[in-house]
Length: 261
Picture: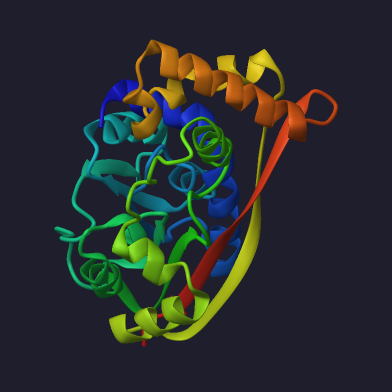
């Protein structure tokens, strides 16, 4: 929720979410000057900034003050755009206010994810597009894949955190389509897309991601010795998959776009 976490998230996780955002903007189409765009659970602006660069009037909302502070800075050069602290399950916005709405790795994490979807559809204008994306499988993508392998290697009996209900529901393409229809969308198209995260190999991998690791719950809870052992396991995983001194991590996201009739 802090400014520091937002900074770390932007430099590490946006390598994944930026690709999902690019695909989302492409599939929705016609995001240009004057298009009213809402980015729900906008994070570090992987979608908001490119949409603003395309000329759209973007409102980026997030419930993390640190993200909103970062988004406000990133969107400051665009007079028609801005960021607000807001709960995606309870949008303080008028019905039909936006031409295109996006919730990328957002609604699936909400405690009341169905309400989040309904709110997104409510603020989308008639004939407008709504886009939702989530990860296909746990633990998501990028460095989280390596961390999960390393933790299993050192602590094979450690139970992974329980996934949010919405993650399990919306990760299935058919279920995602059905839930979006129930929320009020039509002409829904769902696809699976490959997302690639790239970083340095060897000890540079740990240097690149040390701050992000500190925000990963299971790792952060370990003592110094536990972290040292997991770091060694991370380097072993990275060494095994590295090519040409770089790490390429592939994962799958589910992307859906529908129209409010």
